[in-house]
Image 1: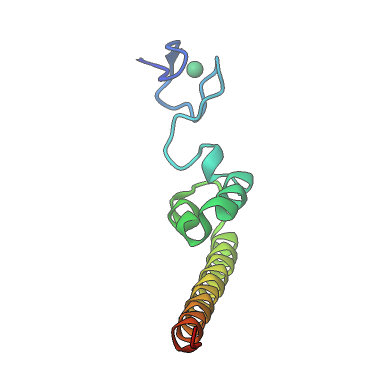
Image 2: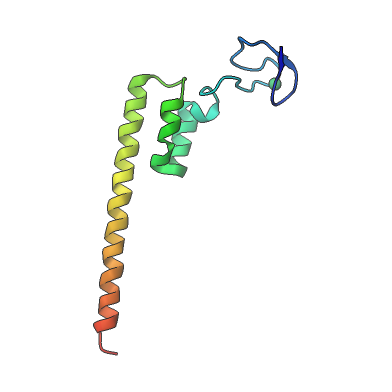
Length: 101
Ligand SMILES: [Zn+2]
């Protein structure tokens, strides 16, 4: 018998969730690994939420691939966006330097 890491009540080895406080006791089953958690993290972390998608035990394989494709698309979009803003800054710098003050 181990105590629950959150509420210290005794828990069964076979339990996925604590009977007393509801904390998930198995890796890959917490809130961050649920669909809601993944979507929230995708907004905050972007493509860096991918490891959580694949570590999750609550999301099906088909859904994992959908999340992977979506996150990859977001990653590419941001990379292109960064590249364009880099070009814009470079252009602006050239204009200012060669603008003849
Ligand atoms: Zn507990």
